[in-house]
Image 1 (tube, rainbow, N blue to C red):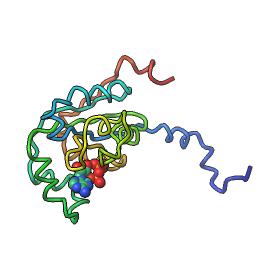
Image 2 (cartoon, rainbow, N blue to C red):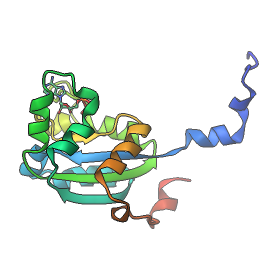
Image 3 (spheres, helix red, strand yellow):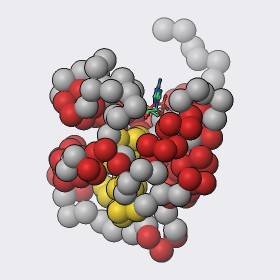
Length: 169
Ligand code: ADP
C-alpha cells in the first residue's frame, strides 16, 4: 500500500470527523401539509434515528422564500417556486445526527418525484417536481445556514435522547 503523503489521514481526530454530527434543515412544503403528510414525514426521520432539535408550523414570507432559494434566483421557475413555498403553512424542522444531511437526501429521494425510488418520501407520495412535498439541505454548510435562517435561537433545543446508546455503539 502506497504511503500517504498526507499523514493526517491516519490521525484519530480525522477518523472522528468521519463521524461528524451534522444538522439538516427539513421542511414539509405547503402541499405536504395540505395533503396530511406531516406525521408521516416526521415519523420517517424519527424511525431512522435522527434527533429533532426544532419544529414549528410557519407561514413563510416572500422575502424568506427568496432568501432560502437564492441560489435558484436565475431559474425560469423561480417566481413559481416562491409562490408555491408561500402558498400555505410549512413545517420547519432541524434534525441532527451523524451523516444526517446525506441520509435525509436519500430518505427524501430525487427532486423529480417520478424519478425518485419507491420507498423514498417523494417516490412514495408525490408525482411532480413543482409539488414535491419536502425540502432537505444539500450540504452540511447549507444545513447550518438554513436552520439559522428559519429558526430563532430560542426555538432550538439541546437534549439527550434516551435511545442514544441503543442507536450507536
Ligand atoms: P431539491 O429540493 O431536490 O434540493 P433543487 O435544489 O434543484 O432540488 O430545487 C429546489 C426546489 O425547486 C425543488 O425541490 C422544487 O420544488 C423546485 N424545482 C426545481 N426544479 C424545478 C422545475 N424544473 N420546475 C419547477 N420547480 C422546480
